[in-house]
Length: 176
Image (cartoon, rainbow, N blue to C red; front, side):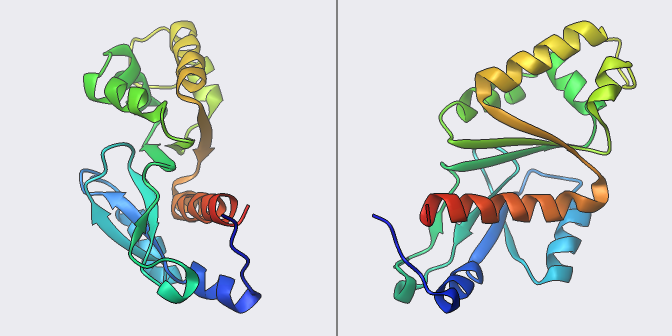
């Protein structure tokens, strides 16, 4: 069922977005500070898959009779560096591998890596003895298997990126 919203209703609907951040996410104060600074609602919640997703607070007048969670439609996994990702892949981190397997069933999956670039993998600019070619090949395969969109983002833009991915998912999922 497709909903049609006026500009005023759409603005109201967007005001009901709440970014969910996994309570297990430890070093994310810079992201939460961004949300606070921009007046973006957020709350900690134990997420089964990923570090971020979103919900729409109940707004019956716009078709959401109760809080509606989009954790089965959107998953955002954040890594603080290529070094962290290398450790997860090389050590075959069981928790991370299970998370990747769960992502297969989620329509929109994103991997955001802070402050590094693909060049850091190719040039072995990470803290691991993991061979850069093996790492690169595993990284590419992981993206394909899990249908991951991967972005390398500066730390200062991480909150912006998370919000915009959630907003885009809402626009494409609800208003397509």
